[in-house]
Structure formats: C-alpha cells, structure tokens
Image (cartoon, rainbow over all chains, first blue to last red; front, side, top):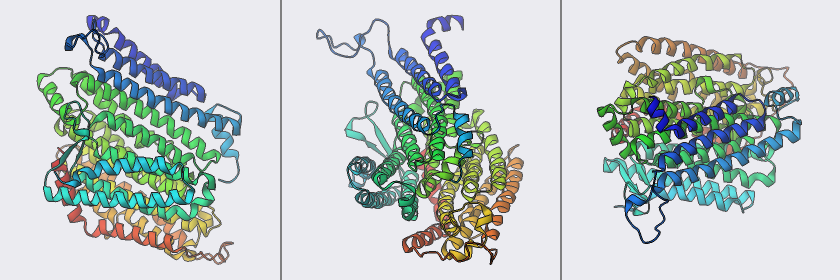
Length: 125
Length: 498
C-alpha cells in the first residue's frame, strides 16, 4: 500500500483536493466560498485525469521531427476529456456567479441561510 | 441501413440548432419553433420505435463513421426509442398546458430565452437516452443541469433564484461525483464506450483486479445520479424548485429531468457495469433502503405541507423512492416495475402540476388549501383532471398508478430473501399516506364553499388548456388500461438493452 501510494502520489493529491472542494461546496455558507470549493473539486478531477493520461518520457501527440512511432506519444483522449471538463466547469461557474450577483443585489448578503431567512420574511410568492 | 438509423442523431441535433436559432427570434416565433420541434421529435422517435420493434434488435449508430474505439456511438432499442417518444409526448403536453400562464410568470422580453432552455433540455434528454458513450452522457448531464437551472430561475423572483442556487449546488455535487466515478472507470478499463467498458469490467471481475476501485467508481456514479434525481436524503432543493417555478417548468422538471438521470443510471447498470455484477455489489442495498425511506418520508412531508404545489413536489420525493426501490430489488421484474413507474409518474405528476394551476387560478392565485375550498366546482376541467391524477397516484384501478403498484407488489412476492417483507409493508404504508394527502385535497376542492370570497370567480375557459388536460387524462388511462402491451415492450427493450 505504501509503495503504491508513493508511486501514485499525484492521484492521492488529486483525491485530497476533490474531497476538500467537495466539503467546501457542501458545508460553506458563503456562496463565493461554495463556488471556489466547486472549482477546487473539479480541478482535483482534472489533475487525476491528466496524471492518468501522462506516461513518463513521452510527449504530447503532435508529430514532431517526423517521428511517427506510437511509443513516443501519449494518448490524447484524457487530455481531451480534461479540456471538455474545463469548458463545462467554466460555464457552470459563470452561471453560479451570475446567480450569486442577482441574489446579492436583492438581499445584500452572500450567506445562503441568511438569504433564505430574508426570503421567508417576504410577503407573497 | 435504413434512413431511420439517422433519426435519433437528427432529433438531438435539431433540438440543439433550434435552441441556437431561438435565441435570435421573438418570443412568439420561438414558441412556434419549439412546438414544431417537439412534434418533429415525437414523429422521429415514434418512427424509430416502430423500426426497432420490427427489427427485433438494437441498432448501433456510429457518429461520423469513425468505428469504435475511436468514434462516438448512439445505440437505440425499443426501450430508448419508446422512452424518447414518451418524453416528447409529456413535454408537448406540459409546454402547451402551461403556455397561458407564461406571460404572467416570465417577462415578455425573456420569452424566447425560455424556449431556448426548453429546446436545450429536450436535446440533452434525448442524448442521455440514446448515447452509448459515457463521457458524452456526462457532458449532456451538465447541459441538462444548466438548462433546468435556467427553467427554475427564469421567473426572476427571490424564491426561484434561491431555489436555483440550491438546485445548482446539489447538482454540482452530484455531477462532481459522477465525473470522478467515470474517470476512475475509464482509468481501470481504458474505454469510454459503454459496450467496451462492459467487456473490460467483466474481465476485471473474473481476474479479481481492482475490486476497490471498481466498487468506489460504481458507488460514486450511483450516488451522484441519485443526488441529481432527488433521492430521499438529497431532496432539500426540490420543493422550492418545483413549487415556485413556472407551471411548465415544474411539470417538465418533475416528470422528465429527474427521470433522465434515472434512465442513465439504469443504462449504466445494464450496459456498463452489467446487471449481475451490480446485483452482487452492496450499492444496490443502499439504493433499496434509501428508496424505502424516501417513500415514507416524502409522503410524511407532503401531508404536513399547506401549499398545494409544494405538496405535489414532496409527493415526487416519494415516487422517486418507489423507482429506486424497484431498481434496488435486483431482479428483472423489479426493474420492469421501476421503468413502468417512470412512465406512470411522469404522466401523472405533470398532470397534477398543470391541473393544480387551474384550481389556484380560480382561488385568487392562492396556493394554500384553505383558499382552494370548492375550487373543483369553479374550474370543472381542472377539478376532474386533478382528481384523476390523485386517484392514479393513490393507485386506484383504471389508472396508471395502480399498474405500477401492482407490478411492484408482484415483483416483491417473487423475491426470495429478506427484501420481500419490507417492500410489501412500506408499499402498504406509503399507499395509505398517499391516500391521506391526495384524498384530503380532492375532498377539499369538492367541498362546497358558499361563503368563499372566490365563489363568484368563473373560470375563463381556455380551450387549449382544457384539451391538454383531456390528453393528459387519456395518457393516464392508456397507461392504466393497456399496460400489457407496454410492459411487454419494456421487457423486450430490457432484453435488447443488455
């Protein structure tokens, strides 16, 4: 187990980041901290994928110097997945930030529980 | 290769393009485009259904003719095509049923954006149904989440924005777990196409390699999708999101969005993990227990609720619990019952949301029960439709809910072991609880209230709305009375699925 952990330390770090982000997204009251937590969580996943896709001693799959042997290059798919994931998380972050701005303009607070209290006090639906 | 092979891909792409085009159109044109789009999707899906059921096996459509393992694939059999057809029907009815309220609920300059979101939602639902690539599924899960969040918040009042934020937070947690699960699965199998993954996983299980990684990834995927579809302990966002968004949004969210995720989960169980491997893991028991808990607690919350739309929303929690209980039974019968309940709940819950709006309209737009006394007399169509929906949810014969309860009970009886008794007991308790809150509402709307301040209100007869209600009732009766054929289709579909 110890040897495995040492060999795969990047993945272990990625998992720790995932859990830190997850806990922040779930437990923080402040909306901005939640969004930061979400970004940490997703970065953990991307680090995990990027580390999976990298093989020591190989280069990115762009043919250089006319060398076409497969052994020289890494598999491009994990990197492609990371890029797709980044696009998704950027758009989700933008959406969350815009929602936060709207809530802040209306209730002058970033604390989700406080906002809920204020909403309950509002009359009507 | 027939032209029908292209229909699923075409319907997904059409929805995406319609969404893009709608963003530049006026509200009215966007609405027309949306209606045409939904009908086109319905026709294409029905043609696909007819084709695959005559073919007798599922079809793998290779996108761009790049063969596996490089390309992306769609795969469709009877179950997928049937589900797409059914979703299109419910979507059309929900959109038309809520249309007359839209101008009150959404600012007129945002109407076209509303239809953009609906188009994107439909495209993501279709993609979740048809895709054979697990990462594509993840991307469309996110599109689905963003579109659903937009549908909740477009009303622009404080409550809906807060509900949208809460929905987003839970959804992000769910999709984060789903993504991590998919990454670990990719890591240990080396594939993203479902069929290749299944072969690789079967090999892993036989060799006994990576047992922990496999278990963790399956757990992450199951829990992630369960959070997104509002299984019991993760349902806190649901009542506000369904209760205060626009009528069409509430109907679509409760009946289709959560079902899309459940369908994806069933697909992953059959096509990626393999039914037997999933059955032998401990996750199935967790889903089973939370399903049972949801059936009770969802109903208890619904009984305590004083707002009709929030009550219907809480009832969704209970019904999602039924579906997960069916999945958790771990037999083919249980799965058939769960899939039938997906159909039944989608048809009934959208009917309830759409008919409830007719009743609250004739009660001065108040949603508390006390104001709704006698509203069934003031809006006769909505009263009858609400009664039909309630009877179906309680499980009265003739209606869809009865058949799904019957299927659940039948599959429970055929279970051997410790799961049979809990299913039957909880099914009984949950039916009684359902009856308490739905019958309470039906009695309330049919109690004459001569001194009610809203007694003088006469419902404006909006014919499209009434026709939609009639169609909803018809769908419910079809599910309830012609269930043999539908169950047969589901059975055939599940065989093609594996």
